[in-house]
Length: 50
Image (cartoon, rainbow, N blue to C red):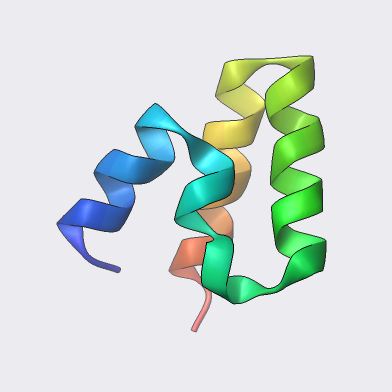
C-alpha cells in the first residue's frame, strides 16, 4: 500500500480501489454515499488486503 493510495483513499475512496475490481468500487462508492468515513475505512481495508 503506497502513500499515494492512502492519500487518494482519504480524498476520494472509490478512485483508490479502481484496480481492485468492479465489486470493490461499487461497495466503496455506496459506503461513501452513506458517509465519507465508512467509504474511507472500506477503501483502506481493501487496499490493505494482499
